[in-house]
Length: 444
Image (tube, rainbow, N blue to C red; front, top):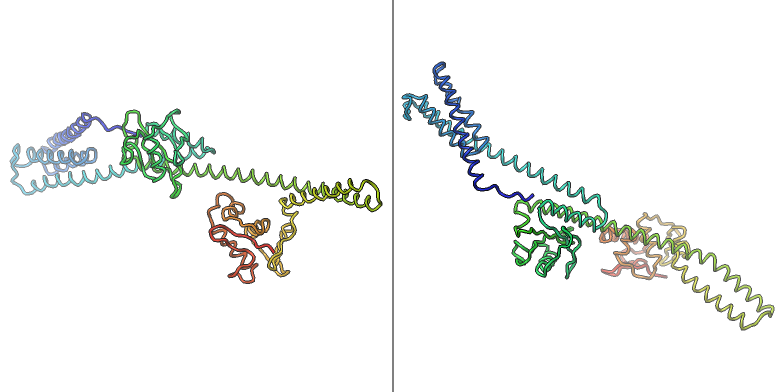
């Protein structure tokens, strides 16, 4: 992607060849005109020069086109206007012909230059879009943040022919990936990376910030948040990214930010699924404990009472057995309160009855219809009645980790619940808000 400008000598040679080509085409047109003039006269000869002028303008631009127009005018004047073999013009039509040739050269060269500019820009846009699509496609096939960071550094290093590194974290940036592996940052480089992470502006070599640094760091943004910084550096000290490549680099870093965010959300989703599976397993175990042990403890307690009533057994031993059985039953009761919804009794407060086992809600004895999200919010509040549940917790539990910042979702659901359950929705008694913190279900 870093194309060196052509050598000065090569540029001069190409310009000389362009002018020489324009003169040669005019010379060929003159020879054709000299062949035509004795047979059909000089009237059609001026048209012979137009293809040469147009071709020079289209292929080489303004300078060669003007040279072709001037040489065509001079050749036409010298060979085909009276008096011939002089540069005098006694006829107004000949003057007009020469002026028209010059105007055609100027206009055509401008049009050709614009066409070439548009074609070059279209080619650049196509190449940039293809590069971005290829970069995004490679990142799309990866799932972990480490793999994405390593592949991104490798692609950036290949595209810009430089070393690449990805850092994140403040106040001490840490290296996530580097190409080639083993690259380390000097204290000046670390300061530049921290500055890029903090301000979101480029910092490092070649910028107005942290000039002593060897690397130049560009922020990787997700929305308005800087989540990482990509550092680029060349071994020869030349800036790795030219002015005309900053747009491409920005687009590539946007794709990197999307890939890193996708990996983060996937990781959080997996953690959420693992937590939910663990909670389900714990709930099943607690339910099994309650169902298996509490009946047996009840039998033990009944047997102890029978022995006491008939005066059998050691009274002190029976008392110890009874008290320990009661204590164990109390422990199990405390544990099963953390169990599945079916083990919890209906929650009643302010005339509202919430039956988590049957998944029903009623107000003053009348069933209330709730949407799935509304019921999920209410059930979560009911399972932890009396406790303050944060906005993030409710959003993560009901809508999933990806929506934990969408507080408006939660506000809409709570507003609907109050309309359906509260006697006076504007003065809630059941679901109360702790400003800036979350919601709680008031226990009866």
